[in-house]
Length: 399
Image (spheres, rainbow, N blue to C red):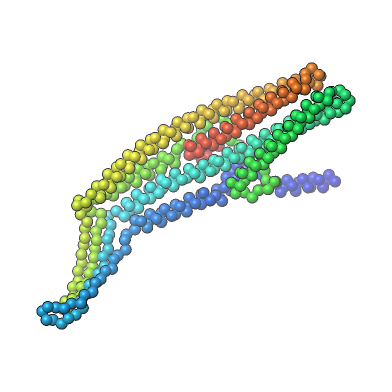
């Protein structure tokens, strides 16, 4: 019989699926529609850029005439047919492509922050579930210990060793703890389901998370990558785009039109070759384009300066919050350790010996539970702040 039970447990263990944070992120990356949408938008922007900056097609034109010469010659038909094409001079077309491409690349770099935010959100959900699970298991153990105590007191009541009032107080507390335990069980189940749905993972009740790879709680966080790298690179590309525009519109002549034409008249055939050069100095388009590029360059610089000042200020605030949270967590862990190993055993011994009332005993247990809940709340806040900081700093790998 024991062998059959062990075999069943072994099969269940094998069928159970344990997922690490790395596996959750890998699944999300492989199936994430946000990343796929960004890849498609990159292809769209490049194709649109090439379409917008490509040369106009050659033009075929023609005209026909019914001629009636006044000198008495025979009436006849005349017609004209020709082809014209506008060509960019030098690297004008390449510069137009580069202006658009740099702006598109800057935009896509900024869009990558959404992907980073999503991934850090997944990391936050992973840690939230692990904390919910720890909280549930801790509280379950606490509840089971209390149930054992209640059963002893229930037996003591039957032997009239304690009063009905004391037993009722214990029963009320047991029911309260049971309701709280069910609530915690639901919370940790929901947090796991949210994570697996966003991670695009087929989940079941047997799917569990490792939680052995949680980020450690530290007072100071060291980034492995330069902070705000995506924003800096996007800014540099926008600046390069405006500088390319300045060079592009500094040319005296940027296009030339060529044409070839054939004319058939009543008594003569004519072949013509033409060239048309726009005189930029007769208009202000190039000048205004340069002015616009200079103003755009200055605006980009001011906007970037303001954005970086806000980011750095928020970064320092988050670092300070993390440091304070880590100090509080360490302090609460020490208090809970003292409470569990020293104070609670004393209170229980005093209660068992009849030196303190059931109310005092229950109040001390509730105080211990409140400290435990405060610890879990601060730990959750710590990880939420941590991954907010990673998103703000635009950092990917920091564990």
